[in-house]
Image (cartoon, rainbow, N blue to C red; front, side, top):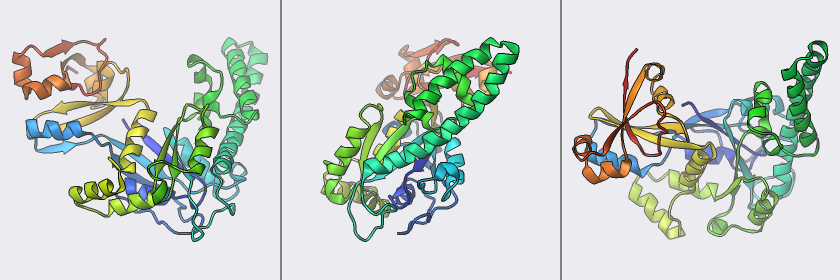
Length: 366
């Protein structure tokens, strides 16, 4: 599955620094607005200790982790919905993303300028929310104009239902609320799929703090948490400057020692990647053989044929059965053959819902 998260935020809040820590790509990071003009694209691996355990048991030629694409998108300013700053480009880049990682500045530093002259994470968040909501309102209004004509001229039932749903979104957006919280059921969301509402995308808030606030947060973090408490959104605390230092350490033991000195169990980057995975409602299954051990990304609740299709469309088209081993059983018995002998390998059909951590082998015919 090709999955993409966009890092957004006001100019100069630490987006590019965080992006550099997340991927091997090197975005320009500088102390001035709009240093990121073209969106930088990187591919990040999803941390998963299970891959290492499978590698030790299987001893494959190679190990391939699950990945997520990450995009560092140009900073946004007031008026972006009208094309000001780099607005039009910014907004079009967000449309291509599956989820939004919203970086908010939650630290004081007189040497790092703020585009609005002072630090206020709630104001900063609302600036971006407003611009995205205005753009969504424009998209909804345009579709309403098209649908109204169909509803009146042909008496089209679908058009009338679409108009009803679109009106709910319009009222919601006019109140300064994001589309993701609109009172619309899942089935009716199909009426807005073609206009790619920006504020319908799931969001993860990242509070960029100073080193002294990385464990407990600070007053700015508390302000942001209070403002988003009704959004059902996750809030992470990360010190991008610390992550930049960690990313320069090539030795795993050195990184672990650095984190331990700060009282941290894992890096903020690792937490962010895992949170993004949860945000998109994703999970992992594995294939394990002599050539490779590989993690495959699927959405939770996906049946076996669709999970097979993530490897290749032919696997889904010609799906016959799936051989499935529970991850814990694989660890217990140590190999596929041992699991088979112990009766811990099951043969599953098209209705089987894949579980996180399943080790699978697909039978198919095309």
